Image (cartoon, rainbow, N blue to C red; front, side, top):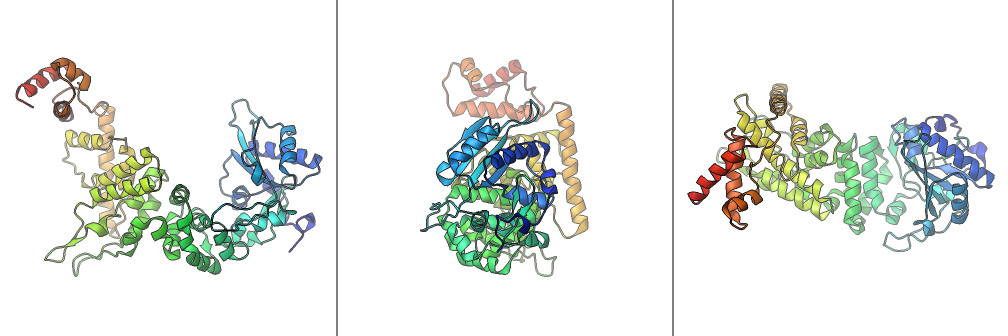
Length: 490
């Protein structure tokens, strides 16, 4: 391989630095000058180099570098370059973090990580590397996961160091492990999930030997913490080609390890009654819904899980008709348990479970729905967290029928429901869908302590509000109704 210290062996790409966002260019230039003055090499590395070469949108806030300098020198040089803050939490791994102010007074600060060339290895089955500082940039690039991520750009000139021909794989859309793929995945099994995630984000195909090594290494994913599995899975779901990423999980055997709740879904091909139109395969349908849904975490997770309980709910009657009664409620429970197992935050978990539970409701909308019926749906979609807009987006994404007339009819129903909700919002009819009296009001009114009686009264008053028979701010009428209800033993 070419000697990375020999700049003439690098592919020249002077325009790479010019394609960075302006704020980043300024920070790169300051650091390049400071490291050159200190007699040290500095290269821009990581996803930003890959994404600039692919002409993808580049986040404007983070920069990663590799350097010949050791941590004490890195810290001193970074401070001379004008860093506002220094973080040394990763110093034992050779990483020093910096924060640089933007060029404008109100600009968002830019985070920078600069890491000494490394040649780490993993001596056991934990993910804790033994770090040895490398001597050359090639040492550093050789430890990276995929050739597309093993390209570096000289911070001063933009010249590219590409000892593993990552650019060729980029242009062909190939994801290939650096060196021996079995070794790369054994070093860090999270790379198995990262491979599927890059497929989802970039739309690449996995090179044959790399794919085979993924299948061989799949059982090692069980060693990775649930939090890291969740983080990578979430990134995969947000990818433009998320369906391809999900197929990569399935083909490699990673799916039943990372997301075992989905294994039955992937195996099921659901058919209608004999002689009738063949229903869509659940796995193919799920992938399409995920990709059609807006790239927001709760919506994408709900798209992935909205039919996950169908294999558990499938029933066939005497006429051969297939049904999935109750799959929404079972799916909500499955989604909640899956996300809790993976360590998702409570807000996301509750939102996804609610979306899965309600995902079929918008598709039942008809022109004769009353305002009260729409208000009830809006209320259900706002407790315990507000998912109304996400629910409508999920329902629209769920329209994947192969029959064009069915697609048009379903899409028209969702659009009509959106319009109905928009009208009620314009009339402020969705502003306060709750009882005019809260628990404190009721306890003070009756001189009674807390108990289930409060819920009964509040639910009755809320229903009157939903039906339009009680104004949400009419406390006097609400008190009269509450007295009548409690007097009857309600």
